[in-house]
Length: 114
Image (cartoon, rainbow, N blue to C red; front, side, top):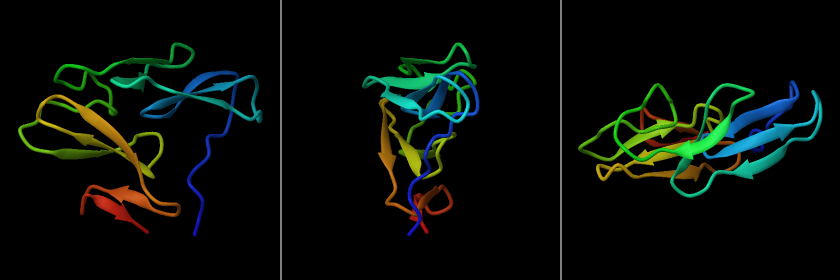
């Protein structure tokens, strides 16, 4: 099976590697340093002002990694890495998960698929 997507540096700066981590690149083509966000945070912003920020509170604020208000359990595909996904709970909490190698998350079936 295919390996999970690896972040590739295309420029110098700080970028979102996934909804739950940032990638620091010293130059294009360099190996990125990956920094996970703290619990309760998501990667947000526009380079070079990327940062891990709190996601608490309902509403997406224009961020595809943040769950909106929901009365049921919902799922989001990670905007930056389709092999990862976000589970949104009615309590305004969200949790991050990864599919197995070679799989991506499908919101059609709310599951990882090959």
